[in-house]
Image 1 (cartoon, helix red, strand yellow):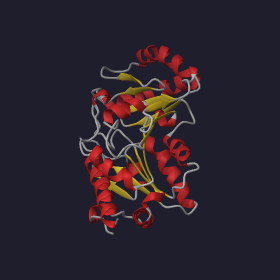
Image 2 (image 1 turned 90 degrees about the vertical axis):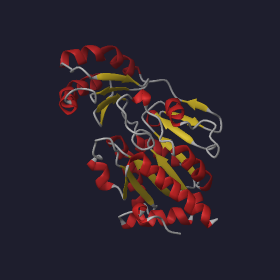
Image 3 (image 1 turned 45 degrees about the horizontal axis):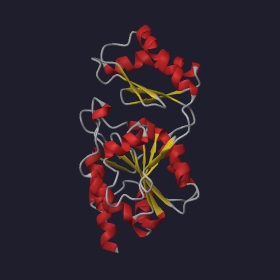
Image 4 (image 1 turned 60 degrees about the horizontal axis):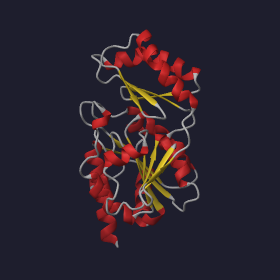
Length: 286
């Protein structure tokens, strides 16, 4: 069973993992970031929505593989809403891990489970406006309150890269004072609890499951821990396919991710093409 040439991994490890997924789909998991992977990057995260081809592609693919999991820094319920995942045919067993795994939404129950947020988040929320003002945050800088984390965006500033560098040190100091960490991304610095990342979320999801092969798709620095988790599994002899969604819209793909990926696809549209091709290939093989 072949794949279109443009969707053929460029590395031997990636080609082996794709072959393993196609040969034993029920022993495989498809892991997906949300923003930049399933949904195009937009200036206002509240306006982000999944590419229109995502739900049809996932609905076709999910019943054919062992599991599909969305791993995101967003609250799980927000990703479900913006993705249009609730009640979608074929996605009855979808799992969404929000806040880097601190929250879990299961399509089977439509329930979200999560522990209480750490106290440090509330403290940072209260102090953040004064810290930004003291640091001279330029117009266009704004804060996204994610409940369990706070993200400071500079995408709307006149010089977003300069604004990000200006805020990096004061935000790191604020986070450290309250037991949090700073996760950098594309024109964003996110303050959140340590030890919670997409690698830990993916590893926890896989624990105890008979799933050998992992395909993971991401687009930003926050996806590196998930890449590292897949690479650790590779070191144990388990197949893993790393895909980079090279987001369109004027921004280059994150080099650290693209360089480590087995396959680079052109943003959410390319991710949809990949998911649809997998579903088509597996359906034909049945």
